[in-house]
Image (cartoon, rainbow, N blue to C red; front, side, top):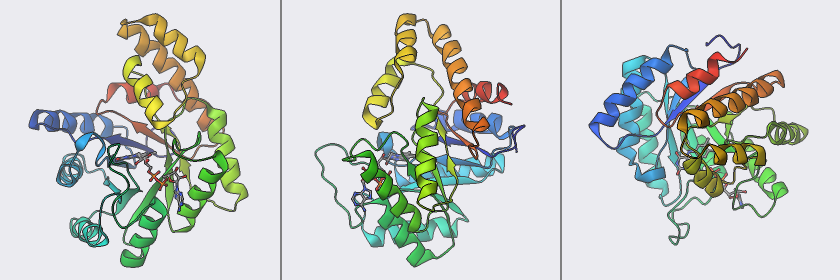
Length: 278
Ligand code: FAD
């Protein structure tokens, strides 16, 4: 455990080159010093392959001794493909998964035999019982394709009831959205931990593009300030660290049961935020 009394976890994407893989293992070592509960490794986004995700999971675990969890998406996959992948994970000693629907590139439709993440969670429970700890995604500001906040909330609740153990949120910069979401989930009798996903601010253009796509709102005062810094990346990172540290402290003070950092394969931004927290 870090100096905080709640668990921390860090998310990575599988590097595309062997140099990137080596660098990631060094980043993993640096982050392992803060004693996270687990690392997780994305799948699919940015063209990563199943093997790339699995190899990164195994390498990180071997290098650092920290448990590493692959993300698994069901979109575009058959039941048999998912079954084989899960068997492989079990054989490799993997105990935790982040179970997702995932996204196909635009224009490719849905594909696959399971349509939504709740069906993937059901499938894992049916075929693998309690062999895996299942993490699912949560959207305090609503998933971008959801017809309404209420519909998305009900879909999230369905996913929890299908057998998820814990949830990690999409990143957000507005603590009230998180607290409201948690309150509504609790009112439905769902008690699983909902861990805020935290995105350190490193680069405004990329953050703005990504936030539009995933439906995360950048509050106006943050946007205006970041825009004003232009290409002064030192000021962007300094201001980013300040606002994101403040957000994390607010979340922890309000009872958030952990923090999951979207590291983008870098150690310093998450560690700088972590050291600011009480
Ligand atoms: P779902 O929970 O299935 O929800 C998707 C949409 O369908 C929502 O609008 C929901 O309201 C609706 N819906 C859900 N269930 C039903 C139902 N039964 N009937 C009708 N509508 C329904 N993407 C990747 O490609 N790779 C990754 O590694 C990855 N990791 C992620 C990690 C986290 C923590 C988060 C928050 C997101 C991640 N994503 C990743 C992005 C994710 O794949 C996308 O947001 C995707 O569009 C939705 O996945 P989901 O599992 O949340 O879907």
